[in-house]
Length: 338
Image 1: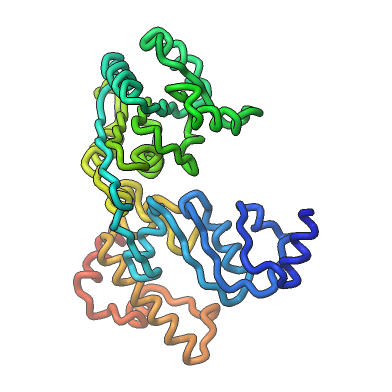
Image 2: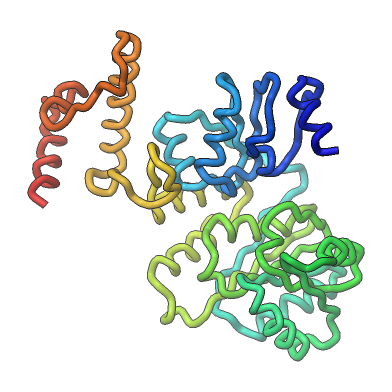
């Protein structure tokens, strides 16, 4: 059946193909690929995305993400990519009440009992599989009358467990980050995430988005250990989650993530980190990068192979029209002295 599909795809008999990263395989041949839509773009690596774009010489690419990775956000803000943002929520949708707090049994009990009392269900998320048994024992003692279930990757009956939970066979599901994407259960309107210091901003936002998928007020409890045990950067990340809790907060979170983790390497595969912008500042780096792109485009139009361009030092500054930029020269000298 798979081979038949591949043959039809290569023969142009398939108009739309929906698939996972398996369509990146070398065995997949396209007849006339014209549009590539990448959903949950933040889950793909640079090499995977570039391989998809190289599948045809002329392909329009539409990338979708609630929380773009720093490299993608950086490219959009610098003008390397175009970006559109959807700010209008579905009718009736209300913001999720987000509470970032130190782990506290009483708060967990109150949140679970309140949700179950109004006929709802709860997601209880941990960062690692080995934490599941610990939390099951904790909840059995804390809320003995509440029906518990669990789910994580690798379980043979995982799909059935999700179906049973959707059918309300249990009140609380203890799960790993497998809940991060693709789970849409309108009756689940409280999520409790433990050990949030082990999650990134994008992950926390995606997890928070698993609730509040109806017109019912939803709640997200993001819990962490004693603050004195956490890194300052971790505390800052959690404060951002508390601050950016409104509808359509993904865009603001992505910009905050860019500031926290760095933009990555525009010309490489790293999707986070600081590569050039840290030394001279983001705005100046953007300005120099854009001038370099204009210069390369001019050279291509003049018939010059960019492979032959190996400019350095004063020659590079002159070519990019930066020789008279005293601020940049001063900065360059300072870096050179370091």
